[in-house]
Figure 1 (cartoon, rainbow, N blue to C red):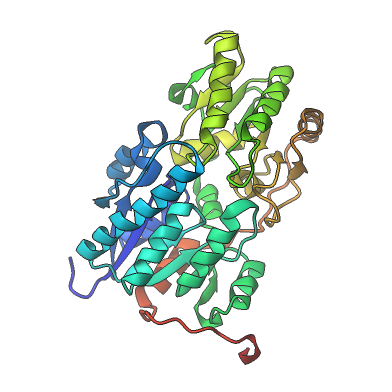
Figure 2: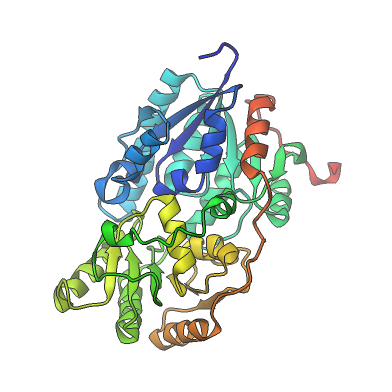
Length: 390
């Protein structure tokens, strides 16, 4: 390692942390003043969620600097809370070994809060991606808590920048750089139609040249009816009889309730006699290709709010998980009732694709972030910035 290089640690505890930050990771990997330290943990170490990601990262030239064995499975709130505690224990050892200068945290997952807390107690400078956004459930509280632990902030839009400053963060360290997600989407060739979905899952064959749907329904950790809501959505997809790529729910509390509905449905209809293909994960480029080809995305994933806005893919957003996020005209918000969801899907299918929205898009997002990380003053102590000082 070149003397004087700044050590920047980026923990990857979910598939989206690699997928949505890939261009930034490449930029930091080749930056003359940055020593990139990747720490892998969480669901990326579980076969059903991350079997493709670590090999793909290694093939792309990335090296894993350390591993966190921090997952307690169970799909309920106690397992989620204990995983956060174990994450803090494991990451304290990693930071002690790596001697990182900056810990770069992305988003609002519960493991990321544990990582930020640990870095703060070890007197590390913390940088945070996607602070200031609004959404539903516990995710919003986690995101704002990470903001208050962080010293440097990379937000995706001007409204989010204003909110972060309103929380007492110094404007000098709050950078509106746009969305890494959208920067990555814009870089993917339109020739990629997501055909590899048929090699990545089980169930029906999806002809991406013909109309098909994508479902991404994740558990809502602050609600108790995840199973009931998943059953309602299955009824809709069953009645529509359109080919559908249904992605496995993430590992948050409530995931087993949705997984149970999937398994029961598959047992009832048989392995071949249906129109749904169940997918655990796709590599980032293939996932974007699939979204580009889809006639509509249904569920509660932020991919519907962000990636699909830029792609113009119609979205039916269900429930409160993405509540209050900045969104484009491609999104129809609905509750969990079957007829409401079905009606919205039919309206979106009739409407067709939307013009691309640039709500989150800026040029050179990765380059801007890497430049700040390489040059920003390292900080330990935080001070509350009074708004009257603006």
